[in-house]
Length: 441
Image 1 (cartoon, rainbow, N blue to C red):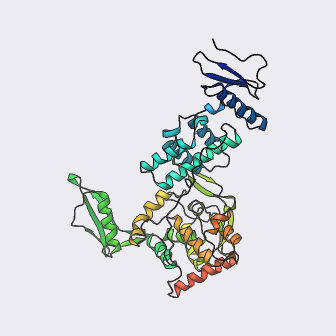
Image 2 (image 1 turned 45 degrees about the horizontal axis):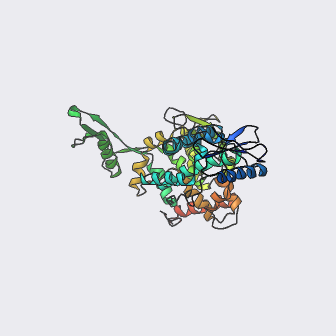
Image 3 (image 1 turned 90 degrees about the horizontal axis):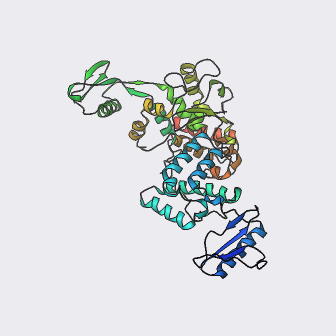
């Protein structure tokens, strides 16, 4: 039979000896309920010290109900993502994927109250040991830290955040390439060129290639084992001048606008005719498309609060934009500037397929170039103008100083100065000066 304390023997809490000989401590919490200490003690003095620590936490207002800490990380994190205010749909998809791929398989069943820094250090080491990239591990760590920060500071489920590994949140991203002005124009011109020909499957499962040369359709003598090999051969023939090609210029303006106005993919793909003012030489960013991992396409606000902005356009690209709008954009003010094949919003996958982006940038010696690198190039051009930090932030659509400071090299100017400086570099191109910016990375 367990032995309890003598009446009035303790001012706070209760200690009793169990049949095993160990001591159990309990106390009445601020919630009016009795709580047992999470473990038993070999000595009565240890149990008394445990009660003293709990009493001190209650007095300081730092007491945390140990029962709440029994919620599993998986359940809490999933709720955290659902209830997190202000997350963009694409961010929700990223967090959900990261949680399911790199966190819950390892720590999902662990109760929040039992998570420790040692456990998190072991989890991180296991991810790295399995070949997960350091950048991805840093992203997963930052997500876990944010979830547990809410558990510690807002919900008071745990006494402190156990994510305390120095440097674990640091992500060393590879430096992105910066194009020269001539490279931007070359890319814009190349994207619309497509070889004239076709690939068909014949008996025995092989493929034959037909192509047009000097207006005449011909059959390639070689037989190809896969469709992709045949298509690649056709592409190479057009590049080397051995096959005719058509030139669809509808994406030329898109590349130039994304670069020299520093636009994100979602922003440039959502532009309407009414957003481009050729007389004022400006483009207005009001909304942006967001592609969900599920395939859905949503129209919403730009990525940041500062994303809604009006950006000046270099005079040198105005004739190209006018030609594009006259040729490819419907007359209605709400008509998309860059519609997809069926007239709706263009998707990244459709753009990459129609332009053969990977083949084009590879042929240019720019393998691995992303569409977002066009914005990066535009940001570098803007920063090279000597503009001040606030002006750079306004043009780029950044609402935090750190992002804009990446590009800042001087502290003078305004958007018109930025636009004029970019325009000057474009004019240097026309005069044969191709040394505006050197490729980086």
